[in-house]
Image 1 (cartoon, helix red, strand yellow):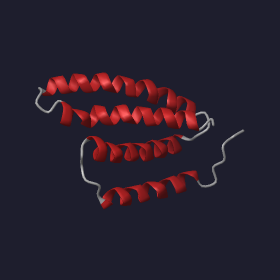
Image 2: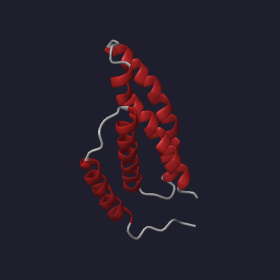
Image 3: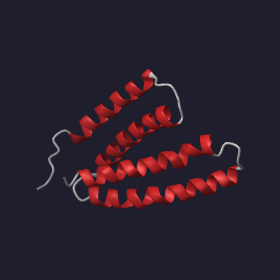
Image 4: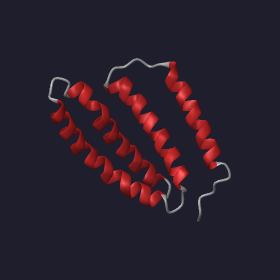
Amino acid sequence: MRLMAPIFMLVGSNLFMTYAWYGHLKDLKGKAVLIAIVASWAVAFFEYCLQVPANRIGFQFLSLAQLKVIQEIITMTVFAVFCIVYMKQSLKLDFLWAGLCLLAAAYFMFRGFTLPS
């Protein structure tokens, strides 16, 4: 359970991050770039409100490299769903290949890992 709190917070953080980075391409495409920048900064504030405590909690029992790999897996998963559902992009086999590479990264980063009691 200790591991789930930072993971859920990082998922929420990545939802905000992905929208801040790419949502303006759909929702603010006709607006000035300065408006898109300010709007993205406003959304990114909520990303950091989740990401900073998630990493502080996770760093109590995970290494920095393990936190990074978890974050990248979450980022790619959220990004794939965002591309397909929100931006209406087509699903490509490249998502599968990238996902397999991330699974390999997770394997090497976490082999032998046990959660401290």
